[in-house]
Amino acid sequence: MTERGNVYLQKSTKDKIEKFNKMRGKAVKSEEFWDLVVITAMDEDQRSAYEIQITDKLERKELPLGINYHVFADPPGCKIGNGGSTLHSLQCLHDKYGKSLSGFKVILIHAGGFSQRLPNASALGKIFTAFPLGNPLYQMLELKLAMYVDFPSHMKPGMLVTCSDDIELYSIPDQEFVVFDKPGFTALAHPSSLSIGTTHGVFVLEPAEVPTISDMQYRTCSQFLHKPTIERMRKSNAICKRKEEEFVYTDSTYYIDHSTAMTLLHIFSEISPLTCEVDAYGDFLQALGRRASVDYTENTANVTKKEKGLVEIRRKIFHRLKGTALNVILLNNSKFYHVGTTEEYLFHLTADPCLRAELGLMASAFSSFILEKTRVCVMHSILHPSVSVSEGSVVEYCRLDANVYVGSRSIISGSWIGTDLKVPSDTFMHSLSVNLDGSTGFVTVAFGVLDDLKKNVPRPADMKALSLFKRSLEDCVGLWGLCLEKVRFSGDASVCSLWNACIFPVCSDLKDSFQMSLKMVKALDGGNTFTLPKNTKLTSLQETLQSKNLEEMLKYRKGLYEDILRVNLSNSL
Ligand SMILES: Nc1nc2c(ncn2[C@@H]2O[C@H](COP(=O)(O)OP(=O)(O)OP(=O)(O)O)[C@@H](O)[C@H]2O)c(=O)[nH]1
Ligand SMILES: C[C@@H]1O[C@H](OP(=O)(O)O)[C@@H](O)[C@H](O)[C@@H]1O
Image (cartoon, rainbow, N blue to C red):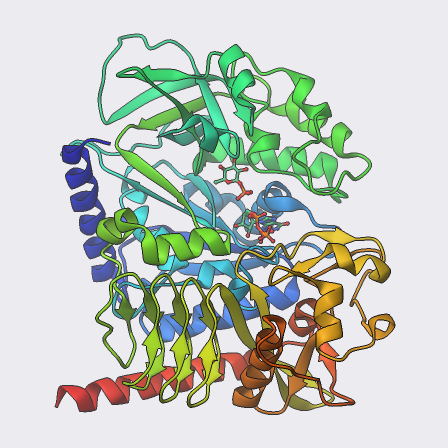
């Protein structure tokens, strides 16, 4: 992107944020905003957690008022993916609004799933991930609504489909608008490197009627490739060139008009109840365009679980959608950010100067303490003035007592860190509240920031192959004085991973919980020894989420909120 492009991008992003800020806590006119904001959840439990948070946000005047916010849970049973959830949400909307849906502009934000790659969002949801900007503090939901704030007034009734772990920034010429008025699908497209293209959707464009270079172009797509290899991009003519530099146009968010939404609803009636994951990108967009071919339906390389019936369902979707237009809006001065892993989260919130400048991210947002450093991120937290947070780290929803030290590239979330404690670098620690036999307990999970929570082995005896803080899990449990054979994995015993390893103590106090887990972490670097007290109840992150005490976690955040307001008020006097 040129320097001039960058200036436009920053200005345009700032304008959108300002526009959205004016809508927060105010009743909006129907023309200027969405008629319905719909968020999807994986199950009823997640739905109620999201609903409570939306209600609290409306009360705190963090969101525009006067429109309907809905949270729809996926039906019970197998995971249906964001495509299945799109279909199910359409059904819920149709059941609720009937014919009047044909007049509504809807934004559908997918937020189901465990967020295993960004586990500080597992309990309360990725869409409620805090970002260091705004007053009141933004979460991903506000960021999405702000970045798309110009869409509803230039859109025909229909639905904008988006996920909760990506952000798109764009600028277009003054007096022009992103217009969604065409039948079929209309997707936003961003110039990206070929390597980004391998992990997202890539558009193959029909030749332009009149070749022009502009910040925004309306084009047609002949084929959509999902997570293609570079070789495939080349073979399919997906690669474009500007000043000798190769790039591809990748996907993010897309719009469907009302009549296409009804086609999807019809498809749903033919394939429900769903017994497999359907992808809103791979399974819908690959069926579109003149050159779409059924071949992809057999390719299950990108599918997490290869359930029976998947290929058949994909084929049905393909045949029903074939012939539907795939329009693309090339946003040539735009950026796509994915914030769905701990690595991406740390980079964009601390190290990345681009997103910081574009969104105006702060080092310290809605917290009791202003940090001098720029490459850190403290949000919704109370820090004693003697605290030190090293560069590259994020602290959110925490209390840090006197002389606490946090090393670099660490994530601390929802915790209370007692006086004089030192958290090593590259450490992820997240405290959660649980319901235990009628009383409240606390669990602080701890991982290396780059540990893979999804990697699994078939038997507990194979835990040597799982790596925690660069040590094998087998070594770790030995260092904590645990008997190898007694280590439990919650849930499905044939899938043993860091996600379901019952290695974290349940404590009766939040501060003690952090301290005990920190001792375990420190025992792993050889510096300190630590043996878990006999009869300590141990649990996993998976099990903790199943028995999470939502009220307690939200109460803790609310307490912090009130204390921060109080501290900041007294500091300003
Ligand atoms: N409602 C619903 N949303 C989903 C489902 N699968 C994925 N999503 C959403 O689609 C988007 C992309 O999915 P992923 O990045 O795989 O989300 P995830 O499963 O939470 O991520 P990890 O556990 O970290 O791999 C996210 O916004 C998810 O919330 C689903 O089965 N139901
Ligand atoms: C924004 C979307 O991200 C998806 O990836 P995941 O978040 O599902 O990993 C891709 O699969 C889609 O093609 C699209 O790019």
